[in-house]
Length: 87
Image 1: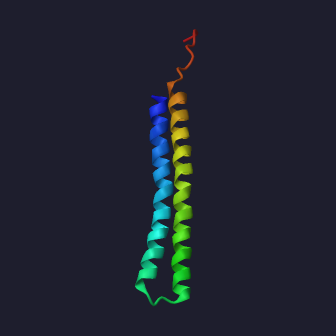
Image 2: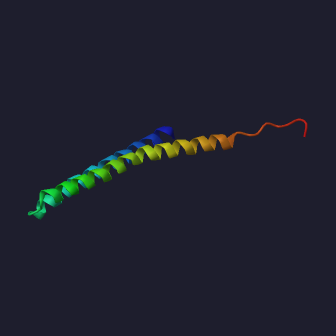
Image 3: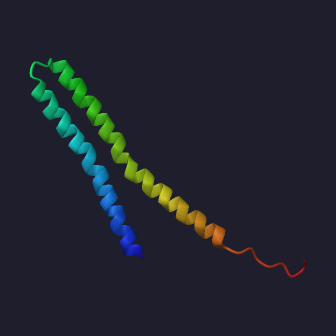
């Protein structure tokens, strides 16, 4: 079960890393295909694409943190309170 979950997470994180870079490549290709673009427009497009990519790359870290917090919450909730003999 743990290995299967790890494989799924690896695939998901790999996909999350590949999609933004594909997005940048597509934007560069699309910009070059448009022809007569000013250099400042190309710079703005690349800069905005890179900012989006940086934000998307942080997603796996956030997902991993949320998964870890979820596991910790389940462990804490699974602990049974001690039985008080004086009740």
